[in-house]
Image (cartoon, rainbow, N blue to C red; front, side, top):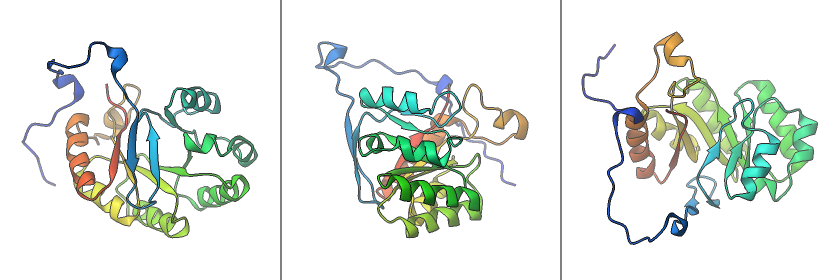
Length: 219
């Protein structure tokens, strides 16, 4: 065990210092961004705000409404194969990610949906704590099987695991363990990392390899 004594920061520890701007109004702000993905070679041109694959959040209805506004959604995992095949269209595939775990059943379900819909561009591989070799191997196999798929995977909170995921084939690493207001991971297990420091350290690691991160949760 290693004890770290240097200061780590959560969002609640900092404020944004105002700075002079050339903009005359908030209406002039343009949030849309273009991101090129290292491994899938695809391009993302939307507002980089993402609805999480949480119950009551990552729904078909939410995805369609946010999609109209230029935002993105990771769907919940509980939809059936039939529901997902019927939902995905070429247009919806631009603003919606399929979400999955790392069991054999998850892989089989994704194959069925991917083949049936034939338009999926984004997949979110979601586990509570992304520090197992099985998780890394799963991401690597997914990349091998679907070379043109943009892979979002997590969650992690450290630079080394961020780099490892990108090298295994991930395009976007989800960063955050236990920072959400309704997340009990830190309370029940004592596992976590102050979210702002995690985001800063993981972003630096990802960008050095041409990858990206998602700051997942945090209040």
